[in-house]
Image 1: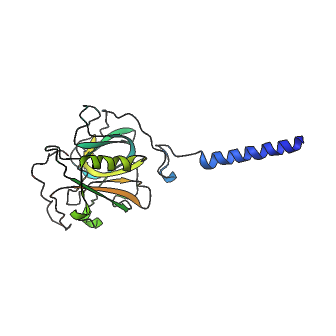
Image 2 (image 1 turned 90 degrees about the horizontal axis):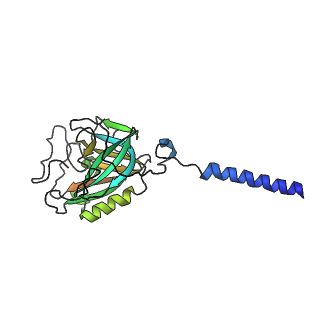
Image 3 (image 1 turned 45 degrees about the vertical axis):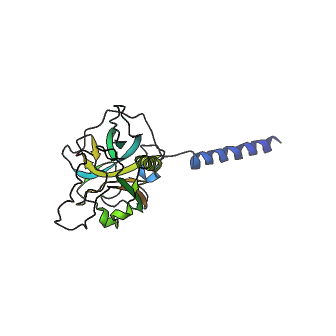
Length: 238
């Protein structure tokens, strides 16, 4: 009888150990990228940012870990404002700001269009924590035209981003620096400087979110073509 009880106990211990190896271990926010997107980390938003990005406006891709999402508001904290959703991304142990338009900052009118694509990272090589530059992305090269991006209200833009980002850990954002601490212009700019947010960037098929403004036309990307004209009246710093 005693031998039988010992045998049952040993079987139970082996089963418990096996469960711990197969289901108990998940990648944390700083884990190995090869382990999948990993468990997201969220921390209180901050007004203290890193300063390692190019100080002059430079297009590129920021690869890091999403740690906070700041909805539009006028609380005068966490670099918030009433017309942008701000992402806070940890890159090399510092936090960086990402400003994404949700409405027109000057008029308050809804003029932001958005859509999504399921594609691999479109440029810059595989996800790798840090800032990457020296390449371009143009919506036209992704097969996207203005009619593919429907107009959304500010509330819809905010909700779409919150839904996209709810469980995100690794993230890539194509955009232009506005100083050493952040990036903006996460939308159609033309001339291979188009901004977009990429979630699940480690997957062979990632989730891309694209943005444009009412009145923009997408000129075909050609060598030597000048940048598309800016929309009159829009704020210079987006």
